[in-house]
Length: 240
Ligand code: ZN
Image (cartoon, rainbow, N blue to C red; front, side, top):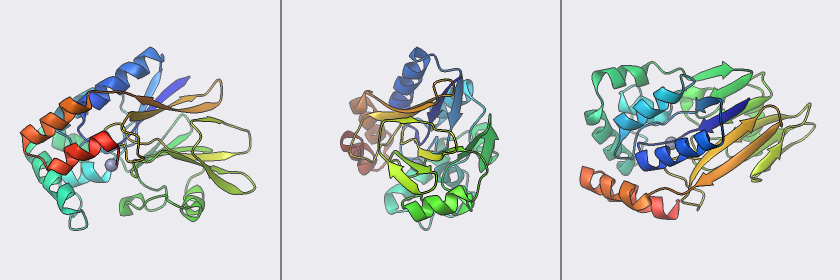
């Protein structure tokens, strides 16, 4: 089975369309989304529609919850707060209910899916260090976990010791456990502006990080036209 894992789309329709067509070309059988469908970008509704069309395996992100007033945005920076307010105004009642009812985590085919951390996911912390990863590995039983949230792809590997890897391809070995941050479709922050996604092949036992070009200029223009913060547009071209 080939799984396509996406996360942190953030209302960027141009990036999402590019990623979904790349996933179709790859012959993906099953889609998984680690959250943050909305926030920052100009097409929250259309992104929700397209993600739902492909999958029901979707967990909540902090921006999804902020857009439906399930979390307080006082810890968000001013740019994110403005984007949340704008997004709230765009969503239909049905879209709001959909986002509000997303689970915090889920298990599908033995894969653990969460947006932020397997431990206390509602605190929206980041897995930035091997110690964060150590705490995370203790909080789920499966051998493979996919997360988003930091917009920076990285894989933590636990066997007798714990290490991290920035390799684009990882071979899954018996007795090892993995937490993979699948990067971001709509707002990469690892210095590479290309949209990011992961393919997990359960027959070949591989995790593969993929990048794809999209119409960044068009996404930027739509953000400016919508009256969203200019920084949301600017950062797309540098991937920061
Ligand atoms: Zn995000």
